[in-house]
Amino acid sequence: MKDLFIKRFGYYKSLGDKSFGQLSDEQIFWQYNDESNSIAILVKHIAGNMLSRWTNFLTEDGEKPWRNRDDEFVSTFKTKQEVIEYWETGWKCLFEGLDQINDENLHHTVYLRGEAHSVIDAVCRQLAHYPYHIGQIVYIAKMVKNDDWKTLSIERNKSQEFNNEMKQRFPNEDAGSNSSPVCFQNSPEVRDEYK
Picture 1 (cartoon, rainbow, N blue to C red):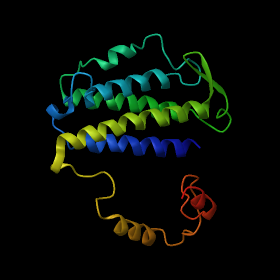
Picture 2: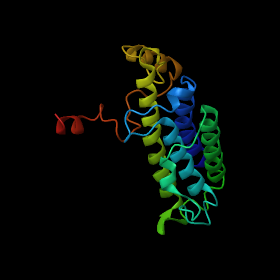
Picture 3: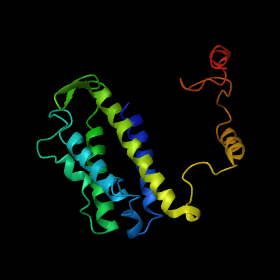
């Protein structure tokens, strides 16, 4: 299970990394308006959350007394390099926390602001939280880069080409089965229900 968590978190980290690689210092700090977050602010919040949640993950409440969440939404970074260094600090803490997980403690209780969670639930909670904000980072980066944006996903009008490549890459997979609970294309009962 730990390896799966590491793989999924690593994928979302890579989306942020690839976005930062396309951006200038100025673009990292761009805000749509005063009520919107810049990428720098989103990084400050994500990494601040990671440091709080994953420091002594199994033994201390995930909302540390030293965390100042409100300050995470105030821009204090001066350079893109500072932003990336803080991003890396947060991820290092997260991966060190994940490394503590094993089959024996997967269902142990940990706390977030006093609320009890199983370890697996606490991990899933963060696996929903970080991609939410990383999606915002990608969206902002895409807006500021406009025509110069290099997609991090399947290129427009290239879906069939991508699908064909995947079928060649994984020829032994059973293409007729649904491995995903959210993929209903091969289930006539569900398809009929949602027509």
